[in-house]
Image (tube, rainbow, N blue to C red; front, side, top):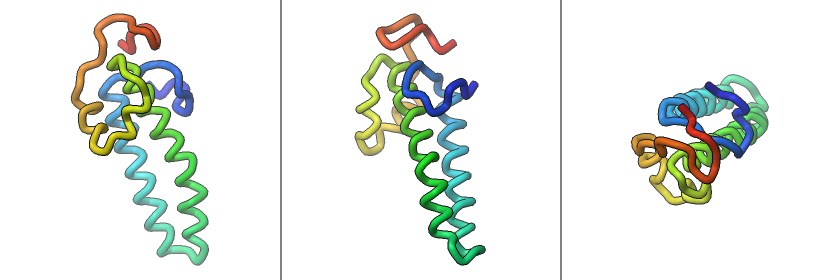
Length: 100
């Protein structure tokens, strides 16, 4: 789990995508709490938000690849709900071998 988390290549399953999503939102919550705790907190939010955004985009692309779709589909509003619950392709697909 979490092999090459910032890479856009490969496939991940539903569980890893869910844990990635939960971890990202937990980290963002922590960063936003930091804005109230320290004077230059907004800089911390931007500095931490960039790697978190890259991480979540990479995980989303890999999840789209697991279902046999292009990573661009994650830009559709609400598509992450489908990615959390849709099963991945059982075998190999054009993106890589099965994530399982």
